[in-house]
Every structure is written in structure tokens, then in C-alpha cells.
Amino acid sequence: MTDGQIMRRTFTCLVLLAVSIVLSPLSALAATYTDSLAIPARLQWNGNYGYCGEVSFISAGLYYGQYVSQYDARAIASPNVSQSLESAQLLVGVNDAAAATRMRLAYAQPTGAALTSAPAFLAWVKGKVVSGSPVVIGVYTNAYKFYGSRNLNYGDTEYDHIVTVTGWTSTHTPSTPATYYSDDTVTLEDHGVWTGTSSGVPPYFFQYPLGPFQQTRRTANASTAEVYSLKNGGNYGIAITGILDTDKKTVPVRLATSQNFESPVIRNGSTARPTASAITLTITLSGLTPGVPYNLYRYNTVNNIPTASFNANAAKAAQKWAVRISSGSTFVQSLTIQSSETAAFRAVPASAP
Image (cartoon, rainbow, N blue to C red; front, side, top):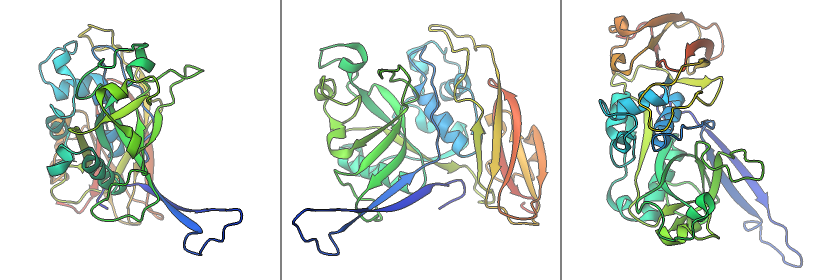
């Protein structure tokens, strides 16, 4: 597992009971492997065609130690394009790789059979998630459940919404490369778009077995279909695998925010940045060695983030902290910023080049 790819894996055993059936010792236990990334729910703006791709990248960025606003995420993805235009969106399969590079994030995209086969695509997604990387994918929304439409052809032929894959569950022994199983379960975070619950409160997280998760445009819109489905072939996705660090000297940094939304939201058709509000970031460094001095840098624009020689490029940082712990392996501190600010953090040993 590389720097920044911090995840939680749990292993449980389910005991199967049967009446009048004698089970062998091997069949009595079914192992369940669960890979869950520590990525909390985050609420998107719905104006200007929706900021789902932008929020997916913000969530992945927080996982690796950097925060940008939804307004800036769109500006980074589509420089000099009006925020109100459909072409300005951060979209998988369009400008996602360029956006990751400009945000100084490392990424991987599907290749080969994963470009045309839904099972191969899901195996690719699984491999990235179980190795600790969040994956951003496009999905169909159910037009009947969202809009009450009985038009089975309603919606985009490629995808309607962009979500973050944050978890995977399987009863099959993990393998490398990852293997597709139709009874595996994928966990999605939808950025609070679906509010069709009895309380009207968005659930954010959805879990689907892979077999029925794959649908055509028409079957995805059926009244009996799930809220979200994956196109049954020809899908788009990008895995955010870490930060750009060619020296491999950084230690993992993760951010948590005091609120999972930006308020006020952008008005539909507006090109103006909404008024900012205060948010508090909790910055957690991990993988530290007691007694070893580290430098923690904060950058206030993605253009200033180095991809190597962080200490030699200290002048590019807006802030710097000297960190030395006496015990344990983590360091935590808080910083309050405005929601319109960029706060990207990198930490390296003080002895690094």
C-alpha cells in the first residue's frame, strides 16, 4: 500500500445454520471480505448542471490531504470556461485526467476489456478499491424514481450522474488481479442527490450486488429498478491513487471538514462564486517515526503544489509547520479557513531533499 492509500479492511465469518442438514466443516463458514475507504458523505451543488464530478474529486482529494471548493474544482477542470455552461463540468471520460493532473493527484484509468465489458470494468474498480484507492464512476439514475417519468429512454445514453465508489464486499477470497463475481457488493456515495426517502433526508450511501447493478438505459428506468445502475458495457471511471510525489518522500496526510457542504450554494445559471463560510479542517499525518522531524506544508493554490523536492520548494508554500512527535505514529492539528480557499497539505521528513 503506497503513501496516502489508507483503508480499513474487515474480515468476518458468517455461521450458516440449517435444520435437518448436516454441514461439512468447510461449508459451515462463509468468509466475508469488506474493504471500506474512510471517505465520508459530501453534499454537492445542484445548480449549473450539477457538481457531482467536482465533489467526487473533492472527496478523493480530502482522502489524500487537500481541499478545494466546488467552484475551484470546476475552474481547475475547465479553465476559462464559464461555470454556468454544461461544457464546464468535471466529467469522467472527458476532462477527469486533466483535472487530476492539475490538482497534483495521481490517477489510473481502465484499459482493455474494462472499456467495453461491464464485468471487466467492475473487476478493475474492485482492484482499485481493495488496494485503497477511491474510484469515480458514471452511473444511470432511475428516471421513474427521480422524476416520475415512464419514458424508458429518458436520460443520457452514457451516464447521468457521477458517484464515488467507497467500498466493496465479497464472499470470495481476494485475488490479484481482482476477479469479478456477480454476488460481490459495491458501495457508492452519491453526494446527497437522492432524497426520495420517507424523511427526505439523503442516505448518501448505496450498496448493490454487481449482477443486477448492470442495466440497459431502458431497464435502469423501470419502476422496479434501483435508484442507480451501471451501464451494461462501455463505462467511464477514474481511480485517484494518491498524490504526485516522484521522490516518494511524503507521509500520508488526510483531511476532515467540520461540515460536509458549502453554503450558500451556487445559483443555477450563475457564474459568480457564492459567499464563503468558515470551515475547520482536521489535518492528520500518519506513518510518522517518533523523534524524527517533519515539515508540513500548506499550499493555497494547486499550481504551487510541487511534485518533488518539497523542502527545496518550501517558498511555494503559504504556511509551514515543524512537526516532531515523541510517541505513536500520528500527528493531528486543526486549521480554520474559508470555504472558498484552497488548502493542500504535504508532509515530508525535514531531511528530505
